[in-house]
Image (tube, rainbow, N blue to C red; front, side, top):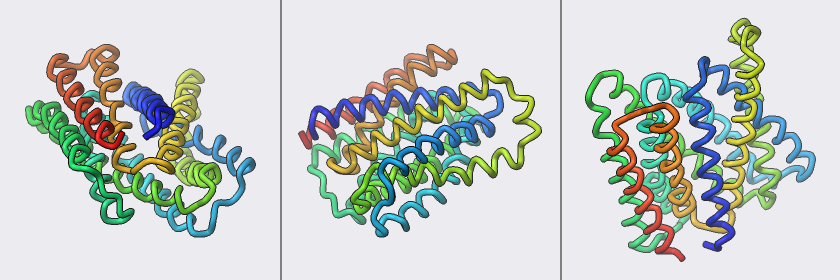
Length: 280
């Protein structure tokens, strides 16, 4: 992995943690998710104008990822309603690299060195340290279940898009189309919640739209990285975002216990370093 790709994915990780904090802190998360999807559609249209159509081989992947992202938005809303940011986010994002690496082995024929696998599983070990506290109560367990479901969905669309962007022969066009396809999410959310949207404050609307641009930039950068680096390694590196999420959770939302969450996040980061270092 080149230094340029490394820093692109690290920056994307920070952006991803930031927009999840925006969703967690929102009063009406369903509407904010609709605004975030809206923040994808406009850049998507611009990318389509600039780059045009990807190869026809990419369109089944575009359809598949659009459907999968519906499940992602639903589970994200549920997870942040029942669990803390500094638990839900690391569990969802930390379990995903193992699933992605396994999926890439099966569907993309990507074989990683042993040290990379050790690093990826170290990520999951850190997640278990963090998730242990969630068994304290029923509401916390609900958040954990939603977070694990999110991990499965994240792995699914990551593999689909990782392969899709490669066969598209036009990364800009592929990213544009998957972003523009979120218009269906926008129409559904606002079509069923228009009365609530009308009384939403301008500040909340702008926060949601900015969150959309931030999340779009994060995912677009990761997809570009996946055109030149293994899916499992990029996904593991991206999960350095758990460090940012843990810090945001304990410092912004005053979530605790601080020590357990920060230690677990550091373990996750160590696993990421091992997995990336193994590939060079």
